[in-house]
Length: 128
Image 1 (spheres, helix red, strand yellow):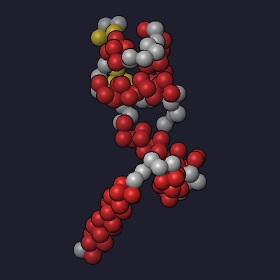
Image 2 (image 1 turned 60 degrees about the vertical axis):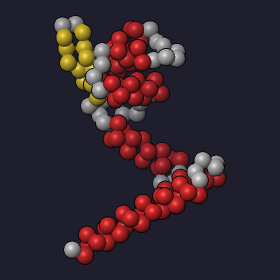
Image 3 (image 1 turned 90 degrees about the vertical axis):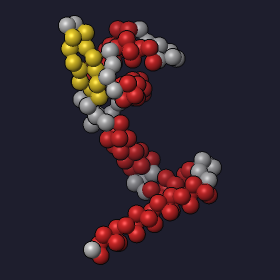
Image 4 (image 1 turned 45 degrees about the vertical axis):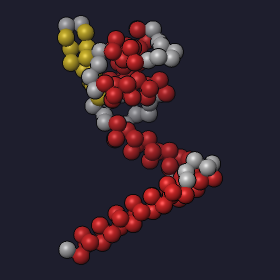
């Protein structure tokens, strides 16, 4: 999975949201710094070349749709970020957000409860 530029990622979020879109549909979703139609078309073709979108042709018009799911991209993006910025440590990720005061004690308790529940399910499935 090739890395996306910031603009390509912004366009992918729109395509994921719309599920199927012509260039004009994507253009209508951009409210700030709207690119020229031809520029947007080029960005979408770049996404096609990188393997993120494909299209159905209707004459000379193309309707684009994602072939990489948002979930798959998110997993790859987060894995790379954790590896590059947090020494491949999820503890470092949580510590970072705690130090930046971006996560509350209640949210941390929810995360712990999720982990404990997952471990409990795993232990129960290992027994059977």
